[in-house]
Image (cartoon, helix red, strand yellow):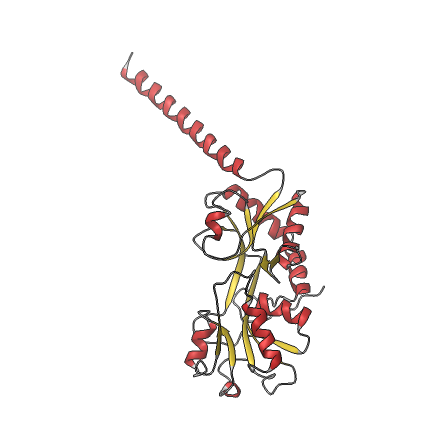
Length: 281
């Protein structure tokens, strides 16, 4: 066989194998995502985000996504703590986590579907109701509740507020302990004077259970660390087709998603965290 013919044969075989392997890899990735249900990984006791009785706003978002995909929602429940992604998404027990911070290396993030911010929560009739920033001198000498290890703790320390603060555990099994609810109960009893909570936790809890409290989005902080975060859906690393499908769904239904979150009481802010968004329901 002439050399040119032999080279052509090798080229043809290489191309055939390349296309075959690519097609196989693509099919394998697609096969991991269920076509029969929207399989969601979620914490069973992370209300107001997710709950086993499906009353959380992430549960309602899952129902919305399932309806748009014309698929029933199916849950794998697991505490949102160490091993959550390993034992759910990576173990192929489910195909999506409804709420995951943008840029996290354990998952492939979709485009973000909302941005929220940490909040200061105080009684409406408190002298602190006019506070807009953790730098406000009115907070000096006050006992402030804070989830240990969260970004606002650095701001409290900078402003000399950490000494009198009361810390609450960050990593817990929420089936047995609920730091956010404990903090708000302490605020109601006078154990603390103010609470600093992640908006998607504090906002909905105040709306449904603590009507005498005021939620103040902390959008005035000028020094790091930042207090606003963009929230995405998380899928398995490498599943680009599924990611793009969800990106398209988010883009086409953003107004409906915004309305759902606003109705739940989630404080929504602009992408750069500088302004609170007003959403009409």
